[in-house]
Length: 89
Image (cartoon, rainbow, N blue to C red; front, side, top):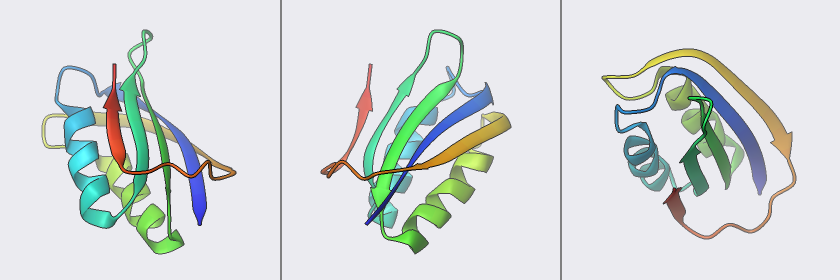
């Protein structure tokens, strides 16, 4: 099991980014969470097999149709045993 902590910057709030991210994470079998930050970025914690994380990271770099991703910062972290994928407030 692997884990990543990411920040997505651009037009990523108000475009259903979190809900599309949850759908994509569930499709790929990735666990974790996503939330909006007060500074306009989206924060994501995700865990799973390396191939699934790579696919999800690639999706984050593009985002959903109405989004515009200007930057994606990702760091490797220790897994916490997340179960499922949730949208946090």
